[in-house]
Image (cartoon, rainbow over all chains, first blue to last red; front, side, top):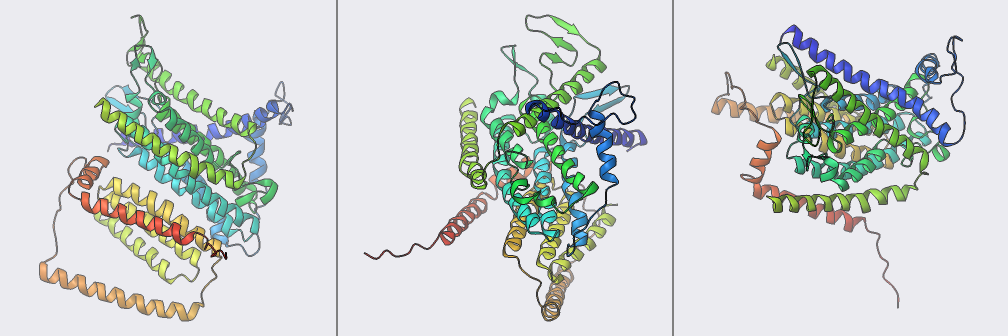
Amino acid sequence: MGLIEVGIAAAKAFAVLMLVLHMSAILLWVERKGSALIQDRIGANRANIFGVMPFNFGLINTLIADPLKLITKEDVVPAGADKFLHFLAPFLAVFPVMVTFAAVPFGDQLVIGDYTINLQVAALDIGILYVLAMSSLAVYGVVLGGWASNSRWALLGGIRGSAQMISYEIAMGLALIGAVMTFGTLDMQAIARAQGHHFFGLIPAWGVIYQPLGFLIFLIAGIAETKRVPFDLPEGESELISGYFTEYSGMKQAAFMLSDFAESVVVAGLVTTLFFGAWQVPFLFRDGFHLPGGAIVALPHLLVVALQIAAFTLKVFFFCVFQILVRWTLPRYRYDQVMDLGWKYLLPLALANMLVTGVVIVLLG
Amino acid sequence: MGAALFLVLAVLTVAAALGVVLHPNPVKSALFLVVTLFLLAVVFVLLEAHMIAALQIIVYAGAIMVLFLFVIMLLNLQIDDPERGRRRLVLRGLAWAGGILLAVELAVLTRGAPVGDVGTAPAGYGGAEAVAKSLFTDFLLPFELTSILLLVAVVGAVVLAQKQRRPTIS
């Protein structure tokens, strides 16, 4: 591998990491201001740090003031805590979430001179399995954070978290199997490309049209995996103070929060890729727009790629905001309701979805 | 490069596996097992068996070990009496290791060790398609039998976990 290829790979990895991190940070702001909007409050408004902004922007608050404050806070390790695991847990929470996005394609091929760049960090032929593997590792941060803190609240939060994440992983995986059967591949870039045509030349053939039920199950299970309201039992601040990260302060606590938001971004990215056409823009092909009715608008290659990346980012952002809307609209479930929903409704539905998908595929040959 | 990587991995894997047996704290033992399984998955990747590697992480590191941890935490298992248990375990582990080493040496001496270049795997080897094909053709019977075995285990667990119904006195 030449130096240029290494550089390209590094640049892609950096770009995707930045995408996830920035999206998470902006989501934090959307959450603050959005919740204020929903609850008829003003929200974060102490942000005009240097007195130079024309108005209180709020975004500055969450992007600069919050991290500064969190970094400079005292890092408290509770007495009797397992120091090493207490230190390790936030990293274990953030790492799997960040690497999941490596398998998600954010655009088609970019051709510059002699180089054809596949706009995906890791072109894995088992992409979906990789995503499931990494998301299944995310539970360790929660469990260890809860256990290593030497606190009843944290331990209960960790136990709740592990039970909930394992339960919903099953429904999530089975919902994905329907999509995998439809597209016949585990490679996420191939799945993205397979969604490029249109039914009757009008409706984009996105995964949600083949798999409406699979999409719903995946979205619900995905939101449950992020442990946010209405599934935030592992945190449950009215009972458990702050659940598994009760005993964390400063930047470590921020790491847990970051991992929550980044998980939302990952869920949005997966929903987009598998069910909403990934980077596909309706009627946009490699050489430009082919509108229904036969009109063709030719576009330069770079503009097409830019449109694809923009479409992917926008779709991901849409589903992130959707999750925040859900979070501020629904009240928290009871714990038995969470378990019932996962095991008694989503799991059988996902199995039925699999069965129906299989029958339809066999019938259509 | 591959051989060096494998050596490093092998040493780390064995070290983590020793940690599973020797660590007095059950939670840390379980965590060492997670590390061992993860490193084994990396070994699978080196062997071009990507599918098996992913499944290894999903099933063992991601699901089974989380349940192990869950149970350990729920029962709040305490640290064993460190000295007695540990010394016996060390002795037992050494005995097993010696025995296995002897068996492997015997096998190598009688059959001759595989040496030299083993070549590269064909394209698609170890991917989802190749694994699925061999699973549903050559190994169909063991595959189905294993699934029945697992089903039996699940039913058994449900039966055992059911609350004892008290005999009603009429």
